[in-house]
Image: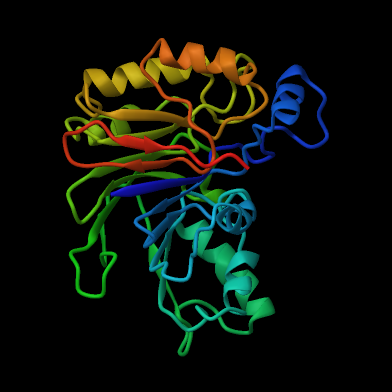
Length: 296
């Protein structure tokens, strides 16, 4: 499984364009910008599609034309920008089938926007968009990267984030056709006990775990550095993470310390800090190999 980090930032990105705090100043002065978190798997599946994501794909030379599945965790606007699907309808990919997977609130947001602007909702006759409802515990099977390849197994698990008006929000346990496993845990506060139980023994090859709040806890239903470390420990104790798992912090904001200090603190708990544009090649039971984006 190839995992391309199109974005690793929070809703407002890092730096926040209006902010002059020390973390934003560091990111701005050093060219270490992060845009809204979105992750591409094997050029076939995109997890989260905020408005930043298409621009990030263009920046890194990534073609989204072959995308077959869009998987979304909840209906906050940095996770699903329905206007992006309208922009897709203006492209050479317009008529290609695309599964849109998400909890009820996500599907409602997409349908309402496209009904207004495109006069055609997902699932209607002639629409290439195929809505698939994601509810915690209900496994979803999707096709593989090739036309006849084995598929992905996508299992939503409960997040601790917001109320039913944005979801109910879910995280994703994704198994690729080659057997590699990805945990996408973004956005969430401390993981519910039922979610830890659902993930027990999964031995993820790559885990992307949100760490929005840094040293400034209390902003929404998110993890800070302390609760992030505690949840990583819980996942390790229950066999969701192993010694070969590559754990990466995502959904990072300027509530964190500047990058070098953040990298040190994450490394101390066995977690990687990777830039936007990094690519991880994951295989079952092996440490992922990482390719960093070319400068400029």
